[in-house]
Image (cartoon, rainbow, N blue to C red; front, side, top):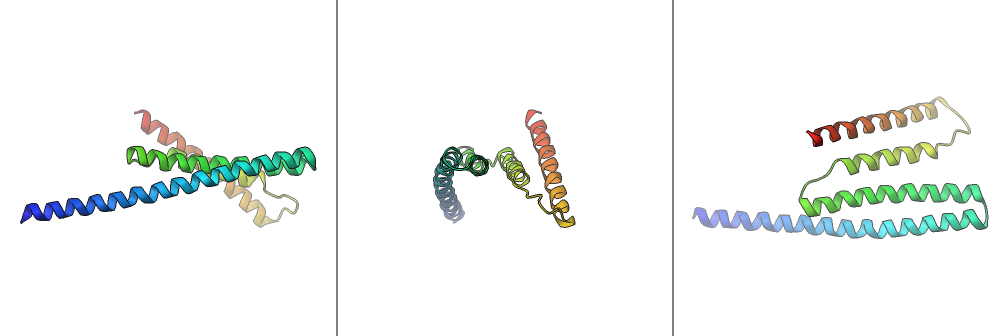
Length: 143
């Protein structure tokens, strides 16, 4: 009776694990498609920069490049999980830093209100905390 119960539990765990892997595969495919669409957006930004307005196209291209980096880092996290069944923290932290830098680069400082200054300070603090976290993770991995 115990062997039947253990066998049933093993099959259930294998089924759930297979389902999880399938979900991660679907997520990886979606992220890959998003990365290609984002790269296309980069090309559009460069074409706008060349043909119409340099500054507007440059900002558009930079915005799209940083978004592509974020997508690639999240995709790398999913792929490493699929290969090793271990979630890597560093790519997630790098994606977070990239997102915050992207936010700061496109922070419109036309009207500096106290709320906007507070937001700028919190974004800067988030980058600092994420950088310290990457340093801590790197130290732990090297030990």
